[in-house]
Amino acid sequence: MHGLCLYGIAEHPLGLMAVLFSLLVISNACFERLFFRTSVDRRLMFGSLFGIIGIACLFWPEVETFSLRDESVWGVLLTIIAVILASLGNMGAIVNNSRNLPVVTVNAHGMAWGALMSVVIASFRGQEFVFPMTAEYVVSLLYLAIVGSSLVFGFYLVLLRSIGSARAAYTSVLFPLVALLLSTFLENYQWSYLAVAGVVSILTGNWLALTKIRRK
Image (cartoon, rainbow, N blue to C red; front, side):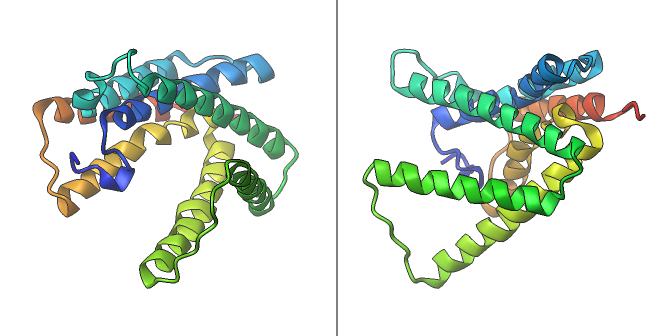
């Protein structure tokens, strides 16, 4: 399992997904340039490059086994689509911020529409709706809904409003790192020299991306 259950990375394609989703930083910067005519910060781009390289180092054993000849390529395509859609959602958040809409209201509407779409897709695929009445399931669901969704996305919207979508998206680079740190204590994850180099690269990218922010 490679000690990555907390991040949901148990097989090599999912390690590659973490690398691909870190491209959110670059896609946000490009879309901001396209839609809002903002300048592309070279320091941020270099920081993003360091972050992506760091993620690749962390999950290199999973990444190097990727092949275009198996079904993993469909996962890659879906992840790229997810990155684009997430980035467009960030652009919508910028518009909402420009209109001074409350973060709680925006977050609530976004989660409601997301839940509705999930129900529609599940119904279309003929999936059965099941709600296990167990303490483990209920507690985990409440944690995911309140802490892992409502609070986290609310904080992300505030962060996006404060430092911009491109820099806020650097959190997508830090998620796997946090998961590995937790796995070190909870699942006895064994660090390699390449993984340590990946951490150094991520932290370097974080420093480049988040320092010397120009303020109006």
